Amino acid sequence: MSNNAYIARQPIVDGEHHLIAYELLFRHSAHAQRAHIETDVDAGITVISNTLFNMGTEWLLKGKLAFINMEASMLMSSFSTLLPKENVVIEVLETVRVTPEVLERLRELREAGYRFALDDFNYLPESEPLLPLADYVKLDVLAHTPEELTRMVHAIRRYPVKLVAEKVETPEQFRHCRSLGFDYFQGYYFARPENLVTRVINPTHATVLQLMEKVRTDADIKDLENLFKKDVALTFKLLRYINSAGFGLSCEVQSIRHAVSILGMQPLYRWLSLLLVTAGTGPTAPTLARTAITRGRLCELLGKQSLPRNDQDNLFIVGVFSLLPALLEITMEQLLERVVIPESFADALLQRSGLYGPFLALAEAVESGEPQRLEDLGTSLMLTPDRVNEAHMQALAWVEQLGID
Image 1 (cartoon, helix red, strand yellow):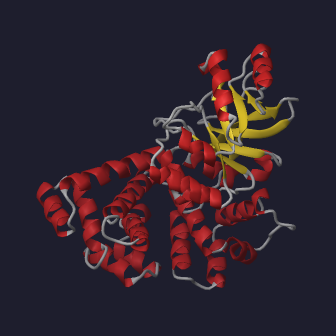
Image 2 (tube, rainbow, N blue to C red):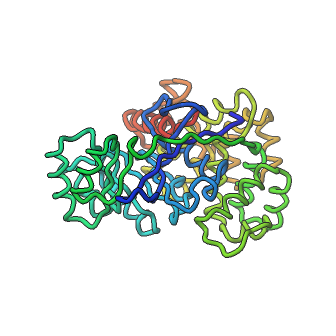
Image 3 (cartoon, rainbow, N blue to C red):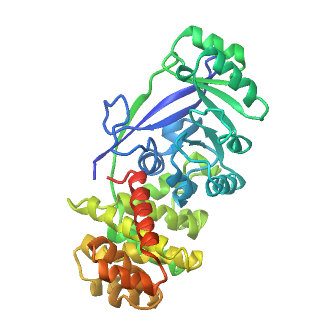
């Protein structure tokens, strides 16, 4: 993993040029002028992890709001809820298809206190259902004629949203947008994105995984505290996260025990799962982590048709754990000696038996391209070849969109 974390921020201002917020943007180096990524995701797991773990919202935002881009995969994932809702506006990218599932997810997040901006919005019948859920609507000044911009502003004003003019590059564009009643403005006329860099210290896979299992089994907080104390990177990242402005604490948290008790077990587990993706420093760690996350997602999707939500979550963990011996360079038996897991997990990992075993075996058959075994296992789970193939494509796309290197 890289020893540095990079991010860019571009100011969003009001009509008097007062700073209101920053849009946070992915960068791959200290001098990059734009995102250089192999997928079409503009912001995702890298921006979130850099914001939460490596830079910290206090230093990065200076009390201002952060606009963070999200593709559908990030919106639907639990990673999105790690962001402090008091500081963050989630930008729903224009590439997000407006499906019933996406609308339901936005309603869930809104009910939890999150705010949304519609990025590069184009007023069309298929995009209109997003407007009642939005707090901000961003319109690309360069993508529309003045007449088109005027028509869209008048149509959108029927909804109680704040309008943001983006890609404002000249005084004339600024004056025109202000005359139309735009609330906020963003673009080169005000400031180009500012690149920021910080050093990164990463925890180890082994410690993160031990902590995840302790959390899952409701271990005593003292056991969690002892594990955190073994890894300075984990302790540093946890205290930075819990002391971020988003928690609104009246005093600084300095103890691991206090931080864990404030955060709670469910949010702690999500936080650790995000760290799992970025932990580890070995040369094969990134590739294996990507494969493990893909397998976990595939197992989860394969179980979606027949298992309840809790078991689908367990399938994700089983899929990830099945590759941990390779990540940690130990045998599965040695892994299970170190980590206490439910018997149903052990059955699946050791013998491909029990409730979860057949799903894991099917995921492995998909990866290895064994057609007869794939067909037999799919039939036993009442999954058609088309459904298995669809789940595989969805898993690959999901991990690709997470931006895991």
